[in-house]
Image 1 (cartoon, rainbow, N blue to C red):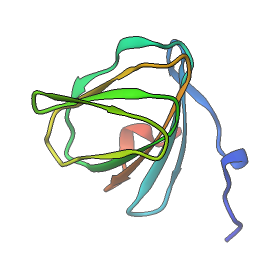
Image 2: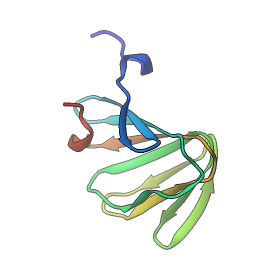
Image 3: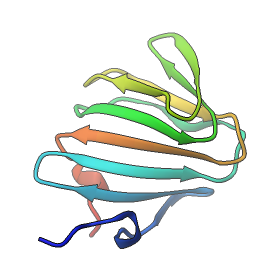
Image 4: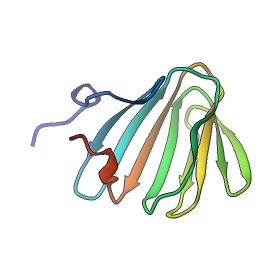
Length: 112
């Protein structure tokens, strides 16, 4: 199997000012998301899903909302969103890059 890299992935604009690149195996998914229109409130509205999620901020700053709390995160910081727990983010900088990891994979993110 050839090595897959960021350059091999296809950018998909999923909302104005935001795009994602998806890589996955049978059981694990990584999504690189670039938000390019910040600062913005509600860039990812509160939502929940059955997938376990760990997210790392690679660039910029975000505000994570979860279970009635808000936490400011910057490069190198991460948060965990357990299955079924509502969470959302605001961007605090003009550009933010967040890397999400999911298990099991999110079928709704799989490129067609």
